[in-house]
Length: 110
Length: 265
Image (cartoon, rainbow over all chains, first blue to last red; front, side, top):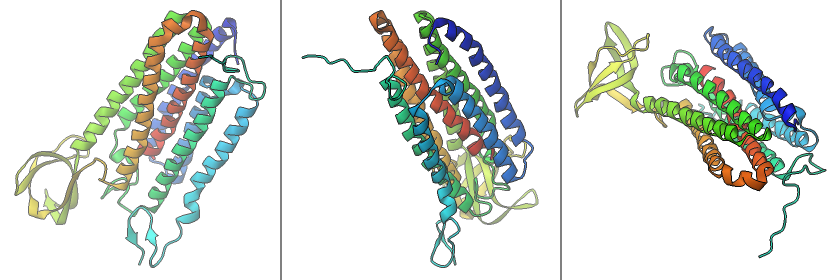
């Protein structure tokens, strides 16, 4: 990571560029949603843009791009369990039938 | 009482490559990812399992949150939070360049932007508590059109009837109509309990809002104690601002995902 005052000065320009990029991507997110695309495509586009924005924040504002070593192992482990958590619903939500609860409704499947 | 120096509170630990405080914040953020991950997972579970026409609210024509949430205010809040992330990183950069005055200025800018975010959120929440949904026992005829439910605002009410201004397609309030209470099956505001979507919306944004308040308290503490700590411990103080910044950028990052998931999809 940048440590000297000179290094930091160089980084200021990057911060402003990332800020501009984030604003443009926010406008793009709202703009794309106005087209009311099909749900799978809309989800893919919105999450792709959010992913790019999140990466910009993590890499440049949180300085992850210049970190090294152990923090990446921790984040990799975290990412693995995060994805596992998101996939968890798909392992359970197809279980419908008599006596089983349809999720989100509180209504028994008859 | 003797004091023992905490090792690697400024210089990087050889094993982790960073000072201990910063490593601790990264571990904390990893646990935060799991906290929000569990709630995002819950959101997916609830959305996929929702019956047609119940997401985001009873009678919805399409399952997008923008029918019940204000996208304009949320987009404004996104810009505010991104700007606060920039002021936070600039506060750290100023301190690195040994400019305390500028560092404090950017800290208070961050605090003010966080406060603005909460004010916007207050208006958003407030509108939910004033907006109402009426579900009728039987289809109700308005202007020759049969409807099963209406959304809008209550202008006045008594034991027997409700004066109701229905929402119009252009977002304004229509002329108020008098509805007999005997014809109403359900009448409630858009606060928690109104629908599954509204519930998960309040849980996710409420938890995020609590994180904003937590961050504001720490930023204010840093702003107040900056003068005292800067004398003799400037590097340690700069590191504290960096650690707070990591947390603050994470709060921004969560909102970056909450915005499209709740408001646009």
